[in-house]
Amino acid sequence: MRWGLRACQIMVVAGVLYLMAAKLVQVGWYDVSQSLPKTPWFYLFFLCIYFAQPVAEWLVYQRLWGAVVKPRFDVFLRMRIYNFALISYAGEAFLAIWAHKNLTQNNKSVISSVKDSSILSGLASNSFTLGLLALFFLSGQLETLTNSDPAYGRYLGFAVASGLILIPLVLKFHDRILAIAPAVAKRVFLIHLARLILVLLLQTAQWAVVFPAIPMTTWLLLLTAQMILTRIPFLPNTDLLFAGLGMTLMGYIDGPEATVAGMFLASGALSQVLNIGFFALTSFKKNLFFNTKVQIMTERENLKNKSIT
Image 1: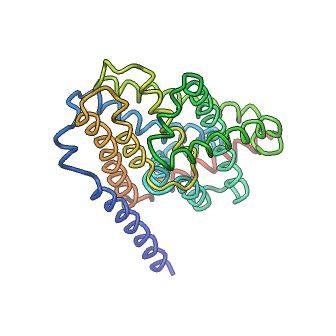
Image 2: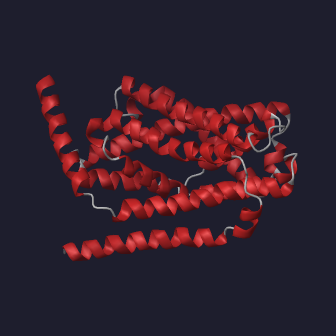
Image 3: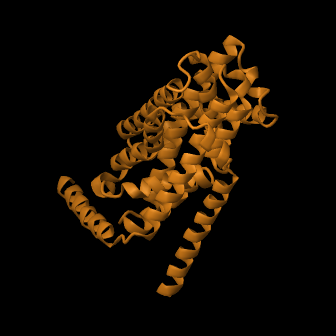
């Protein structure tokens, strides 16, 4: 039985690695190599952006599950890979399965925590996205996005509709929708919102070091496009989707097309390289030490909670 489960695990890991490798093959490596940004700041900002998501989720689940998850940053790194390299919300499914296997909480509590964090993340993202869309609607620049891709108008419509439904729904019925305490929900929401603002600043800085003369509104438009993509459920490989979208908007950016293409291709390719590297690293390492530490910390948390009650 154990050998069968181990074989299934290896097959799943191998399948995921194959899918990500297939995406890497699609990248135009020659074009990337010829037009890579020269400034090291581009790559430093890229790394900060890449790790922003797993760090935020790691902090969120320390609020929800306690210090028991503190030594398991690798879990949230894999959560990011599943969401961005494969299909959105696959990371949440992976996290729920991992928590069921490694934590002492019951299934209902685990699923409820993942659901609450996802709702609060969506609330922060939708609020942020609607604000950016309103800005460009008032400025008359929203047509640039809708004209860039025939499917993008549908993405935009879905993002607006989901935001207009989700935000008032959660605000009005938060005590019925969310299982966590209001104070914890507020902290989780603020962590997700802070992550969005930080990524916006880092992404703008990353692009600005390559094209310092481009106005801020151009980068904000691209960031709005990125935010809309993250609001669409079950989209495959949003890292490469956004790189492709950036290339369709090259005419809107006042810069050499080769350099613009290189910038977006570099980000898409580097994301895939890190995804496949970290996925392999976190899949085949021995987790005995971490699992033991998780169990010990869980028991301490339970004893602490019992002493408080």
